[in-house]
Image (cartoon, rainbow, N blue to C red; front, top):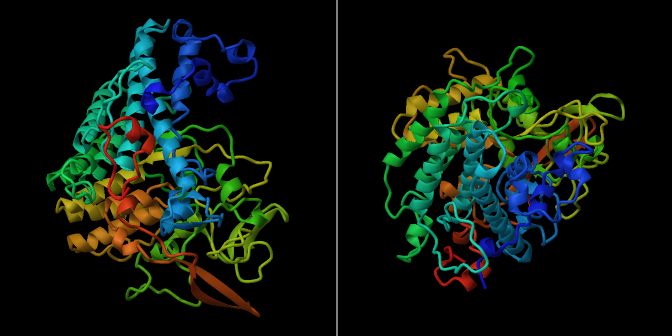
Length: 582
């Protein structure tokens, strides 16, 4: 019996079939059978060679699809303090995660993700093995190899943050007869491999792609992924912070010893992206405060996009996140913790002196990003039934959209709906569509990465400058000191909390929160804590607000920090070691 990623039969026809959804009618895939294709015939044809690479590109949306509530592809937002899942059943993967049951649904999803990622790596290796024989120009072969190697590093970066150190297969395409005795590489070796691959491809990829090549991998994408990997590697969980006490497991799950210089490496990597001068925050506070933050997610081409999942016209988020009256299937409900994290319009956090927060009107005069991220009671959104902007009511007893019990799954149980990345004029069952692509890495993340690494390196003023830039774009008031609510002098610890909060709100629902809490090693602060909601009662024209606990308290213990190596892998390879807590 061999290893999953060695023995996984990846039929050429199946791989090419992954791309058929992107083909126009009467394309070569529509008009002839692919059942008899093998590597030689595929890579003897330029169109099929390109389709093979497109099939690998098609896997880049892993962890970005809001529909996948019962896989590990994208449920992480509902497993943290960011949101609650609509589906109350115990088979729901996010529920198994935050309840700590880790049942069959979680195990199956975890196994599938391991296989999915290693399948992507194998596909890259098949491409690299054969592309030189394809009838493509020398320049296209060279460029496509760099793209494929980036995609392989991208798959490995998910394996790294999911499991720690993993098996590194290099360029090998192993067959059924090959023995499986490969151990997991150390965490350090896995980081070094990913970084070395990204450095190599960044040196040869273009800084910009245009026309039909727009959306393909660029130098900026390679450098940005490197910055993300190094920031995670410098963080407390991995920088000498292994949760294992076993000598042979520690180096698989973290660097054995902490080294503060790793923060500087992460800072330098983010600065390299900034120094390309290819990206900038999309800013528009003239149309209305924070309009750039809103519009950026709807524009296929924008100055903030570094890596995107390229989509055709769609209403992906509108269909899956909006409330019942707006034709959505409302898969996740934002938490009160997230709402509270947004500062006031003057940049001061709720509860701090001079914030101006009004408990009887809690959504007034807030950071404009709140309006573009969360639908709260009274928030305006286009209503196709009246063909106009109209308020959404989430209070007790409100028709269709009003708050319900956590077990109901017919409407919100937190008092909120998600509207991040949604076009306010496109509703879930609207005939209209957007041209959006799904953001996988955007420039705001790079600024936040730079800020965090700078602060941890003792360069707090540089860190705060990045927050000022983000808040300026957000439409927060500049204030008399033009610091957008950011104090002029903060300790490293104070700035750390501010940076963590800024990541929470700026990157909400972009699948960062779960992994941020893990790498910051903050599980103890969230374990046993309830996700909060807001129950609003209407009496006449007056609203009364009461914070509530929603469902079970969150579970966050040792085995929450790294996912388990599939037992099928361990059972057939004695060299494979399991992660702590599993």
